[in-house]
Length: 303
Image 1 (tube, rainbow, N blue to C red):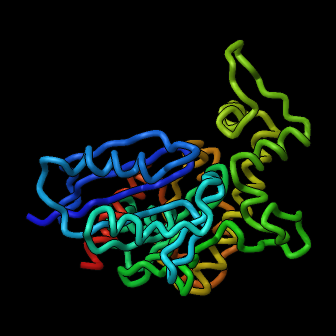
Image 2 (cartoon, rainbow, N blue to C red; image 1 turned 180 degrees about the vertical axis):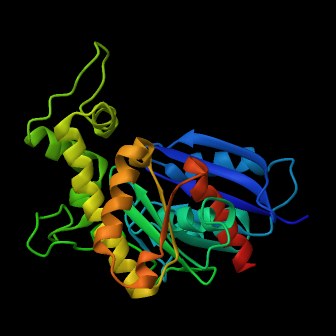
């Protein structure tokens, strides 16, 4: 049996696993992401996962971006100590193994295509809806990464050229309408008053989803607005690259029906061409493990 080392690097958590060619995890571990000296924490995690186990023959890394695939460098927004950091080379030197790198959302898409809700689909768009919105494409079974490794960055597709200015500098980006913080921001600006139950809850997307499920009209409208932005992006992506499946994960996807019901209805309204209307939308089945699974698959494909 052959094994690969899968690594998932985010602003709050480092995860690693020894994974076999069928996708089964032999050993795994996680650690909080430190603000400085991330490589020392990552090295310790790799040792924890690999020591005494079967030797892996390749490493796959999914990392928060932006990244430069050609150079193998990363500059995660939430990791200020890494700017243009040569992650691929540092991990290769640490492990002595062939090492491949992709964005965390691209690995999410690849993981869901391999083992999750998009298993065996012809062409898939994976979307992570959380603090921001990331994405990845798997076309004819292969990840589409792009020249610099940033293909599938659907959160910054413009669905309204005259719309709101996004934090990225663009205008009308999907993220400005459908990310967790922006759902809550719009709701608060439009009169939403969270129905706190006496606990220390935040006025965030989770509370907004709870209130939407209870019928709060502003909360419902916020998810309708976010779903319309997502639907426009999905229809545009489907028209451009003929995806057959969309898998949505991330914290906001936990809203369930208050997100997916309006999304299905609005997508049916905005999609016209038959092959666009045929796209199936699913909620992630792998959840937080999807990116790690995708990193493993990335390594297996590159061997």
